[in-house]
Image (cartoon, rainbow, N blue to C red; front, side, top):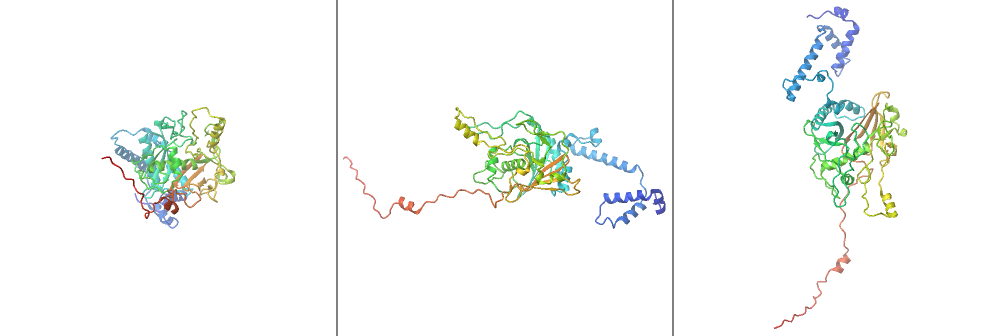
Length: 451
C-alpha cells in the first residue's frame, strides 16, 4: 500500500489525531532530544502506510500465545492448557502473596532509594519463586545488607508450617532461661503490621537473585541479640564466617545477621498514626478499619508526631517481654520488691518517634516530603540511628525498607569491645616473692639409716 499525500493524510486523519500519534510515539520511544525529533517523527507517521485497525490486537494476541508457549516450556508443562485466570491477565496466588514489589520500588525511588529497574524486576521474580518453594503465606522484601565480598538480599516471610503461632522455645537446661520468646497459642496475623516478637517472621537471604539460592536464617535467641549489641563489624558475605568478638558471640555470621535484622526491624518499623489501634488493655494493636491515610505535609512535621512505632521494643535482656524464673520458695516482701525493680519495661505500643533518643546532637528521625507535587507526593521518614532504614507512606500504603551495612549509629567514634588488659604485677611483689640466688640453701638433715 502506497503512502498517501500530505494533503490526503491530513484530510483523512485530522490534526488532533496526528498530534496524538506523534506524542504517543515520543512517549513509547524516548530519545535524548525529543523536541528536535518531532519533525522527523511527524514525517515518519505521515508517510508510512496506515495500519489496519485489527493489526494491533492481532499482534497482541500473537505475543500472548508466544509467551504462554515459552512459559510451558520453561516450567516443563508440555502441551497442557493454560488456566483461564492466567489467560485473562489476572494475578495468580503466588503473585498476591508477594505483593506489588515493583510498585513499592517506584515508591521508594521517590524517597531516594533504588535497586535499579533490572534488579527490582529480578527481585520480584525471585520472591515469587521463594513463595512457591516454601509454601509461604506472605513474602515481603525486607531490604539489603551490604557486605565486603557480597551483599545479602533479605526476604521477610510468614510460613504456613508454623500454624500462625510463635515458635516454641528450646528446653531449659540447668536453670537457664529459655533462649526464645514464650510460645503463644494466639494466631499471628501475617497481614497485621504490628510485630510483637523477634521470631514472628522467618527471614531468607540470598546474594544472587537467581530464584534458587535463598537460604533460611535460624531463629534468633535473646543471648544472640544481647551479644550483638557489643559487636561492631562489617558483614563478610559468607553465612558460615566466624564473628570474632569479646565476649565471644554465640554463633556465626548467619546468627549475627539474624540478630541485626531483629534489632533493625524492631527499631525502625514505623507507620502513620491511626493505622493501628489498641482495642483493649494489654492487647496487641490491630488494624483500624476507618484509616484512610494522612497527608504528607502532616507526616513531614516532627512536631505533629504522626509517625509511630509498629514493633515492640527489644529489651536489654534480648526479648520483647521480660522473663524471670519463678522462685522456688516463698519470697519475702524485700525479694518481691527487688524483683519488681529489676523488671525491664519497654516503650508503650504505638509510641511516637518524638520519644526516641537523639543520636548525639542529631534527631533520631529525619522527616520530609518525597519527590513530586506535595499533594500527591509520599511522606518519607529516614532513621538516623540506623542509617539506611526508610519508611515511605502515601494514602493507606506504607513501605519499610533497609539498605545499609547493618551498623548502628551510636554518636561515638567506636564501640568495639576489646579483650581485658593483662593484670600487671609490681616489681616489689616480684622481688619479695623471688628467692635470692646468692643466698646459700639451708643445710639438709642427714638421714640416718639403720644398718
